[in-house]
Amino acid sequence: MSMQSHLAELERRHAALERKIEVALLHPSTDSLELAHMKRKKLKIKDQIERIRSDETLH
Image 1 (cartoon, rainbow, N blue to C red):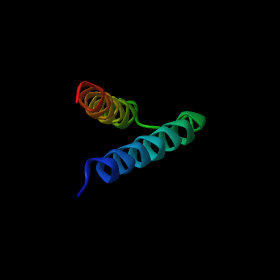
Image 2: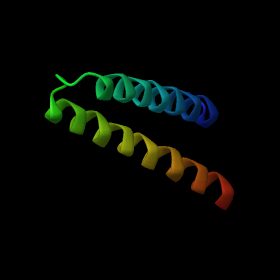
Image 3: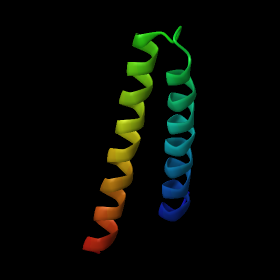
């Protein structure tokens, strides 16, 4: 997998998690632990995206 396609996949997963979190926040019965898990996962993906972008600018 090329770095560009990997970056695109990470961005897609990040956007999907963002939508999932937004939907979960609309429902008062959302499990707070599951919500926290999704937010952590989204943050990890964001960190990966930033690391890849940073590496690309260095090279």
